[in-house]
Image 1 (cartoon, rainbow, N blue to C red):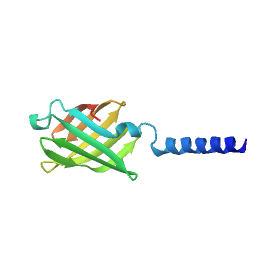
Image 2: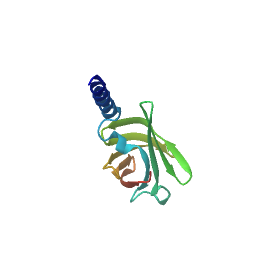
Image 3: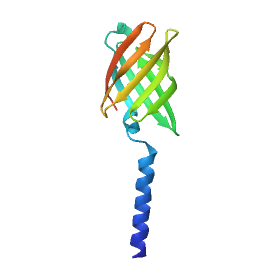
Image 4: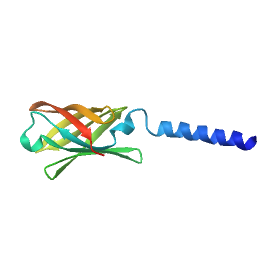
Length: 122
């Protein structure tokens, strides 16, 4: 009987720990996303967005035409992420939301707002 109680206590503790490891929606952001940016210059109209979380630290970068744009000022809340990248010396704010396998949002620069859509690659 004691063994059974200990087992259930350990199982319950494990479930609580796992549910707090990634708040709702956060884990859905992690991965590689193939994106399209309708209305963007052709060289930036498609590529990949990579979102990672290692040791409680979020990282994101955008891969397009053999270039890597590393993000800064990352903010994550549930299934939403926002960050900044610099393209040709100009700051671009990227705001995204995921619904598990799809991504939508926008990239905002001094040239205007470009809608973004994407699908999870991995």
